[in-house]
Image (tube, rainbow, N blue to C red; front, side, top):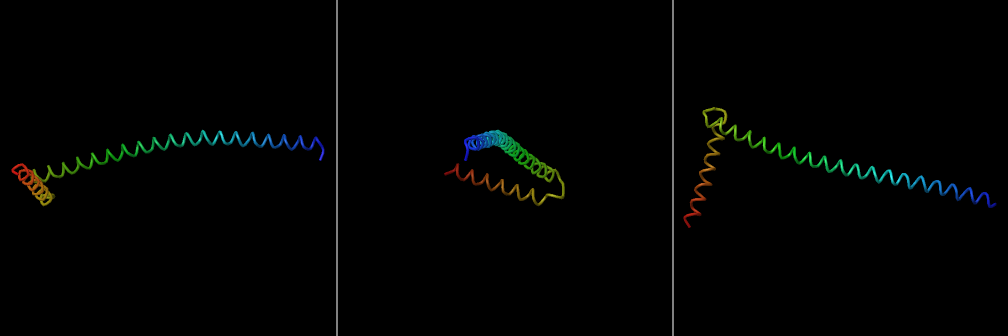
Length: 98
């Protein structure tokens, strides 16, 4: 091999290494962006989950209130809920009496 061929090979290797380092840097920045997006999506998901739970509780309270006001559709459910509340109160009273 001649010296000029070796220089060409070294130049080619340097060029390829430079391109690889550039790609590595781009991938690193992309990875950081994706991690930030993931955190944002997780936060949104958690906020949505909390909101759904709050609305579910409000819906259940509304159903119970509706049935207590004389709605025929949920009377059985209301009676069961009232019985559960009475049992819980009885349990609390029993613990206070001890």
